[in-house]
Image 1 (tube, rainbow over the protein chains, first blue to last red):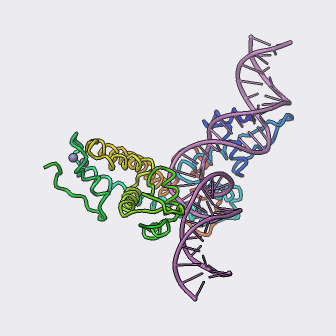
Image 2 (cartoon, rainbow over the protein chains, first blue to last red):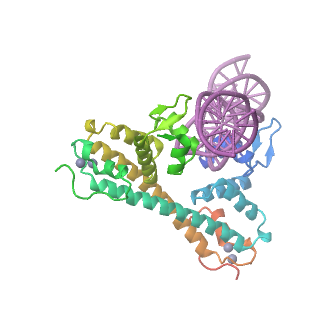
Image 3 (spheres, rainbow over the protein chains, first blue to last red):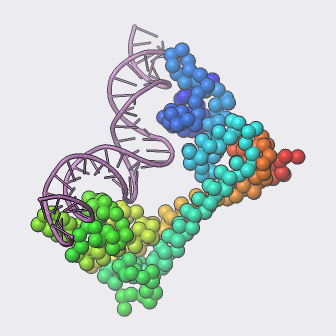
Length: 144
Length: 144
DNA sequence: CTTGACCTAGGACCTAGATCTAAGGTTTAT
DNA sequence: ATAAACCTTAGATCTAGGTCCTAGGTCAAG
Ligand SMILES: [Zn+2]
Ligand SMILES: [Zn+2]
Ligand SMILES: [Zn+2]
Ligand SMILES: [Zn+2]
């Protein structure tokens, strides 16, 4: 049996995070001591590690709650259910990746067009690009 | 001169967003009507579009505030200052991209190992991977 | 003159995932 | 026996970027 601080330290998270997970129906201690302290079992620790691993893979806590509800009742769920959660998440991650890649491309284009020197920014191509209503960046060097 | 609703509609944002930008020192209307209505000039509109373009490239509002302070006073800033903002942002975007790519790889690995069928999830490789303390996913198919 | 669209200020509320505070009770070590 | 470390609860706070609400003032058309 772990008390909250012991489990938190063992899993390198904050005590408050465990209370937060309890309030949000992710993980409740199996019992309480006479004085009301939370008591976690090895099984509780396993569940916590399941949660932390799922977080590491990118799942939100809401998604992890769904995974857990399957996990505790595997027999009544199909592989299809589990895989759908993963694939839905994968799509979301890929959409976010696409957006960030768009950001990266734009920023690179802006960066490459600017000399980065100590000249006044009056003709800075970065600022010009942000002022103009096109996506173009002048590629000739400024400061003639 | 645009009233708040006109400018908002022209730029396809919410009236409240303009008030929010004003409160957060990004864009203040050049004047007010006798009755206190915000009045925006064409120049204000240009600044708004600068803000929206910068947002589109991934800058946060705090970063945009920095860009604007350079923009309104270009002569006193160097290309180096502008480029540094862009490059710092680019690095942040690339770190986030790396994290998301890690998520993507893990999720793909999980998804590929699961049959996704209507069989019971009792031997689902996804759940097994999340239960186990390794990063491995069994690649042999479950459900013998 | 009334209706409806528009505007004002100020503050509350939202998501996500915690983290922190206050005021007090419990356990452990010295 | 008493200090240090640990625990309890409820609720506040934080980031980011807004959105919504209240209670009321303004403006144009019919
Ligand atoms: Zn330059
Ligand atoms: Zn430049
Ligand atoms: Zn299967
Ligand atoms: Zn499966």
